[in-house]
Image 1 (cartoon, helix red, strand yellow):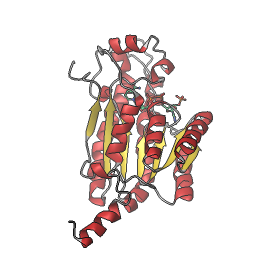
Image 2 (cartoon, helix red, strand yellow):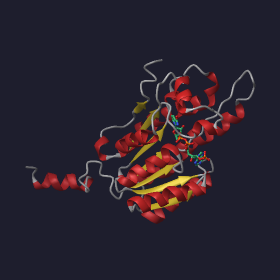
Image 3 (tube, helix red, strand yellow):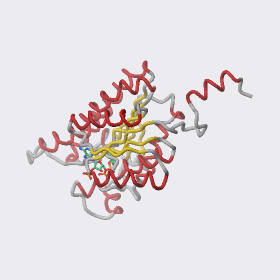
Image 4 (cartoon, rainbow, N blue to C red):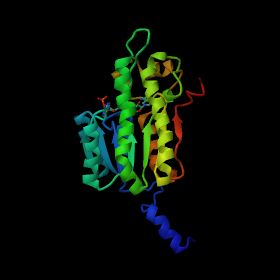
Length: 271
Ligand SMILES: NC(=O)c1ccc[n+]([C@@H]2O[C@H](COP(=O)([O-])OP(=O)(O)OC[C@H]3O[C@@H](n4cnc5c(N)ncnc54)[C@H](OP(=O)(O)O)[C@@H]3O)[C@@H](O)[C@H]2O)c1
């Protein structure tokens, strides 16, 4: 039997009693038009969250918001946003606050995969572009969301990668790897700075996941062939990554901050 005073205190934090406590929480997901981001927006909507679907491709924003609304009766907001453009990031935050009043969770997911090498002298363009989207935008959006996250005691989940701590033997991933290593370090600093305010910051670091990020980067082949190039017999599905993101953003993970979560079917273990 839980004493009534404690029950009330618990209820203040956990009003939907589902354990995740994401009902009516306002969740921004960037790059939510496809892949891991689309699965993540859907997974939050399933938990009753108010989802802000932000992506650079307007048609995909519409598709994902429509799916969340029609299949789950979710309250959602679609925002066309290129996260590498500061003005569009500002609008994403202000549109969210105008529509839903606050921000509880920011998922910095938008990302691209590029290649570049020193010997071919072709690294600078992909470096600038990749760092702008995969790292700078995460820092900027987190900064803009911070006043709201401090009010709600909310949290940030950044989508990093196992390539933040390994090259998988292929140096041409350099711009991408640098961006994800930087994102991991940003997470540590942000978690350290914001934990006294009750704001958590964590990174999810997937191994290879079945999304179009590979074909957009010019990597061709079946999933089996792409998996084998990473010495894997199978690759993760975007929904598996979404489940971990939802968990980390939820009340269940209330003690977790400043942590990298690898989800890679053992790829790192296999070296
Ligand atoms: N798939 C993997 O194996 C894997 C592994 C580890 C980490 N990750 C990380 O997971 C995250 C999601 O990747 P994914 O695999 O789901 O890729 P994806 O299927 O390509 O989805 C990424 C989404 O972000 C959008 N996007 C790209 N640039 C953007 C920008 N400047 N502003 C706003 N949205 C933008 C993409 O739009 P477009 O259609 O225009 O590209 C796309 O809708 C990325 O951060 C990626 O680095 C992926």
